Image 1: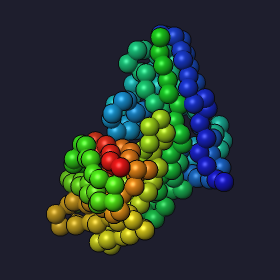
Image 2: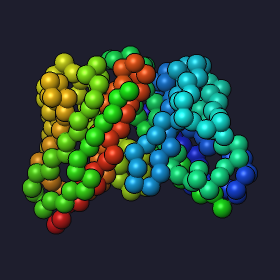
Image 3: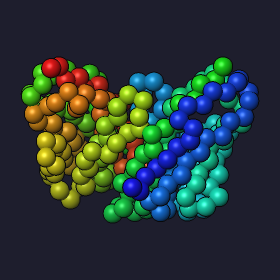
Image 4: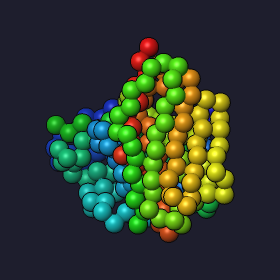
Length: 115
Length: 112
C-alpha cells in the first residue's frame, strides 16, 4: 500500500545533541511537509518542499533544518534540541500545491523526547 | 492570514447518537476544507474533505457541509460507534500561502 513512513516512531535525545528524523513516501507526491504537534494542540507547519524547492515558515526557528535528497525521502534536522522541542513531529505529503491535488496525507509521526 | 475556529473543544455523546463539530474561517478566498481524525499516538487521518464549489458531501456515516456566505463548515457523524472516539481537526487551505490552517481540535468521546 502506498503510504507515508516515519522513522523512528520514538526518539530520545539529550539537550543540545543533534537529532535527525526521517520520512519516506511511496505515493510519488511532489510536496512533503514537516509539522510539529505539541500535546493537545493542532499541528504547526514548520516547512515544506515542493520538489526541490524549500519553503520555510516565517516563525520556524533556525534550529530546525530540512533536507530532501530525492522524491521519496525528507529529513528533519534539529541542530540543538531544547526541552521546548519535545513534541510529535509529523510528515505529510500532497500530490501538488494546486487546488485540485492538495489533499495532505500524514505519516504516523515521531515522538521526540528531550532529556 | 487565515484563521480557523473550531467548537466544541470536547464533545461526549452516547453510542448511536449523532455528533456535530463546527468550524469557522476568516478568509473568503479559502477553497478547500479537510477534516482529520487523530487517534492517540497516531498521525492525523484524512476522513473527508470539501471544496468550495459544493455545499455538502457524504461518505457513509460522515458528512460535511459548507456555507461559504457565513464562512463556516461542519462535520456530522451519525450512528456513532466507540471507534469514532478520537480528536478531530478541521482545516482550511490558505490560498495565498497554499498551506493548511488547522482548528484547535475537538476531543470526541463516544460513551457505550
